[in-house]
Image 1 (cartoon, rainbow, N blue to C red):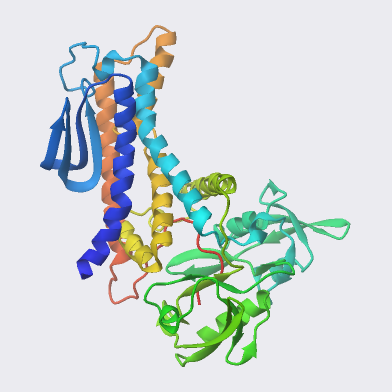
Image 2 (cartoon, helix red, strand yellow; image 1 turned 120 degrees about the horizontal axis):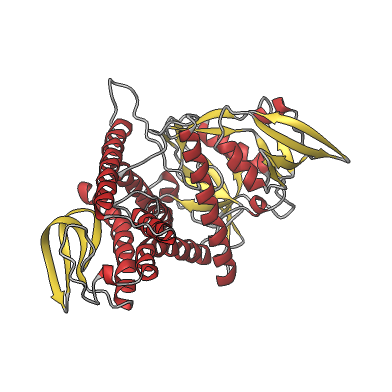
Length: 466
């Protein structure tokens, strides 16, 4: 069961993403009458398959990917000019086929995120509200910058009228970097400089500023997610429970109560603690014993304002905004890598770390596993659009380049295409080697140092995990 507990979540996440990506190419190729010779899940030797019509549907030896082989697609094969060959079709149809795979992955990410929001939405409402500051932690970066309770952040790092979520993202992705901030205080505005402090979260360096939101009069301190097999689950804690007391002391249902809860658990020294909760209108007392996890005592649950179910239209709107947010944060991270503000080794993850992430996500539950699938599906779609020959984006680039050259009477010759494919293949292999080495370096401890694993650039569950 040990190996299966790692492999099964990995296959659950990667398998559908690969199949859906290739199905995108396949279905559009079929739509345009292109003969598809092979639909393969995996690369290398054919292990099993069935042939229907012109297509061999197969499972191959190496599971890290897949492909669709269309007639007349490759430069090294004999082009007969048959009407059902890839190269016999107009450029716009070939472009549609190339785009179909990445688009299918992006649509998958949108659908999964919306579906999750329709059954379990735990994002605090203040994240979408204007960045009105309810409080500032003592000794924090925000206090040093001169930000005060009641301030409204109207601009941060060039972004006007940010939400609290926008400010949270800017702070998180810019540890130890100076962020220009404009705050409105009463009828006046002030220009300040915020330099988020560096905080290590499961091996990742993120920024923290000590900004507290305005929660509103109806705020509740609720359990939004319980980790499978955790002390919290064993104690009987359930999603939706409202936590109103710890060790006999009442908890305010605001930010101070959240801090008191986290401090009470982390400062327990591993001794049992008593939680008072409200479930279905009844007061209950539960006892749980925190265990050490990543250097802190935890019970294994997330807390926040509570969970709700969004109607379909709202869920789709949220999914659209959330996926745009992930794209923006990914762009920020990659830009920081290019400008040497962020380590490439701590930003790019490959199969080995995805294996670990999927294992960890599976322990959190099905919703976390599907959230990771959505994130990776989006990133797979965008990655395949990069203009690197041998990727979908490389084919799109060459087709567009051919169209532009055709306007001035030039052509993209076969030798040039072959050379571009060779260069693209070398670049891709270099990236693959880098990713594998980087994964091993991050996952395996070395020289007796504590193991540190970088988490992927993804939106984390809101609220702390005590």
